[in-house]
Length: 260
Image (cartoon, rainbow, N blue to C red; front, side):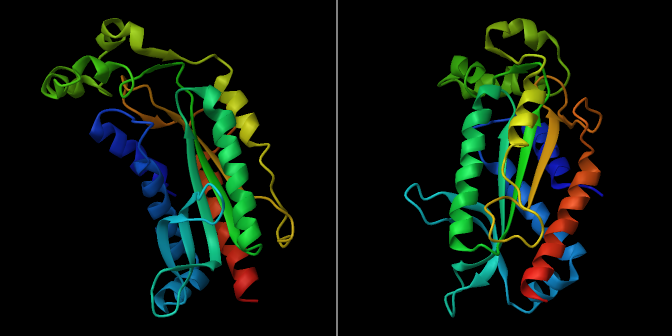
């Protein structure tokens, strides 16, 4: 089956480059997952159509740091139509580690903390994480490096650089050699191994703190060549199979926790 990550890649290609400081990819993933859940999970679809549950993006979760839940599926507050945090049913968190793999520890901590917060609010909530992991060895850092040259001269950037990005124009590597972020050969594998350490829980064990599913998606994004989901990878990950399994797992857990 197709995945929301295809839409993310298409958006990066149309935009020209990946901006790791924006959260647009998270919204695309959340919207796509919700659409697939409605299409493939009859029980959830009936609840959505009946107004029992609704979906929201970027809902503030309780806690000192006021984290946001990327995809919130749950019951609305009576008459207000706003999400009822205590009636959360499905929570999806989306993260990415594309360029600086040193950030994997920070993203791991983010996901671990969010899981604990959500579990504290609603143990029965289905908790899911998706992580984009970059597999490119070299990445041309456009947002933090190249665009600095064009501060106050954005027209020049749009005319001379932007059309060449994600097009396969290899002269970019030489022209902006100082703006290349280098990843080590084992960085992607180490990042995957790190996120495999996120606590998970067996079906039905809602008293246990952990994710119900953790989906890792390898992507090749270097801002020079056309971006792609790395369906062929050395990480042993079958993206389409794992995504379909995630949708099925969410549906089964949702059905068991609210309709049995």
